[in-house]
Length: 619
Ligand SMILES: Cc1ncc(C[n+]2csc(CCOP(=O)(O)OP(=O)(O)O)c2C)c(N)n1
Image 1 (tube, rainbow, N blue to C red):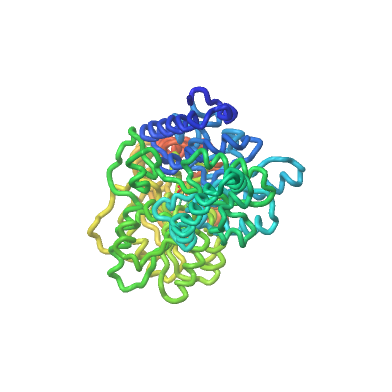
Image 2: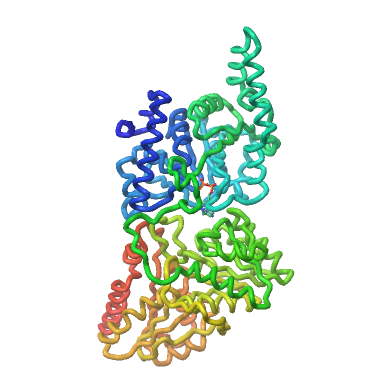
């Protein structure tokens, strides 16, 4: 069946039985491909039926289907002309694991970060009305993404303007791990509320017993808005906001979904369809443990040695519980990704999962900090972007202590441009009061975390995705002098100043550079991007003619630009070359491929250094 589906139009003439068969085929394709190559697993499997029903009823791309996050939209990709390319998903040059406008006319809005679909959808709906156009806007958002504040900002606007927009709430009662918060409890109550469900069935049964007119009544109940609404309104929260609530509906019952989608298609006002789906559907193992099978690494993944930076943070938090300092760890729905799940399990009162709510996480942190509890926010660099103003306004302006553990700083690989953590240094660098640090290895990460907790200052630590082979499980924490760099090798004439992940790269090519120059070079662990070690900068400027800076982050506003800025005020400064990521978004690929593309792998850096030195010699 799937071979015949080249666009959503090809679905329209299929029977319901054929749609069910198609669902099996798509699920098999997703399972096979992701098990082989890696990618998201349980979320896309959970919405295969929902996706088929949506594309069956709506006319994409005329009607706008807007998927939140996009990690679940694999069936959407397969049905919209990307079936044969599906095997390239998340690979260099292949299709994205999220949504991209330039990949397909069916990807209405690019995504990767959560909770944008209602707001973007409302913008689209208003543009439609301004242009006097005629199409449906359907935003599909998960219960996890619904924990983000942006969803409420969108609904607040939508309910007020009463524009046509359909929200599909894809409720599988899971975020990556458990979905948290009062809303999640509320949704769960609706789905499991026996009184409501019983009343619904009872009324249905009663109508069936009314002689002669039972068919008419049932038809009326099915067709009329009130009928679909379900005789009773469990979603009063949404109703009060001005958004009709319909549900809960079974997200694997194609008949029911198609019937309801057809009915709401003609609504001119906002409506929310609450659809419950089974995460990991049609994979026994993923249905049983959707969190474990949230994503797979694929068969070709080579296990690297060492321990992940994320895990080191988790271990360090456990170790630091025995210290006197009171702290609370905050995660925005990323306990597993940021390596703190064991800590959370063992110290439930020392952590909070706020949901996909990064801005709330930081404002919440400011409150803790005022009362002497040190907040430790474990967050991916890319998601920290959501909380930029809260960092400035709630933490830095008031100089409140807080530790930002920024995981996945640098190039993350297959997740691509929405997920690379390459802007954190530039974003934070211009803000007063913040300490920006990056460890050279696992031991230094532990010590920086310890230093941060005891610093009584806003303190950020950035570290990359992946493993680190220098880490001593049994070490005791040491305080590091804030703003103090470290010589890893002392030479003259040429100095390399490297931040975090770039230090190992520089050490690995040290011998090649020294062979070329026939003299020792200086390599410095610039573990504090801010404040910089000005004493050391002054010291090296005396006997070094050339300074190179390296960072796995945006060049503009980054570490190198701070060094340039510093020397711009100094008489006869050394020649300075900065190397980071140029002013661009970086595509997907393996981390190694991307380091090469951005010129941050060993070979490229070696060539960069030698070419610059050669040029210097010529001039
Ligand atoms: C702003 C932001 N924070 C965190 C994430 C990481 N993330 C991706 S999917 C996801 C869970 C989404 O849950 P839900 O919306 O319920 O979708 P499901 O996977 O359950 O279908 C999270 C936390 C993200 N993509 N964006």
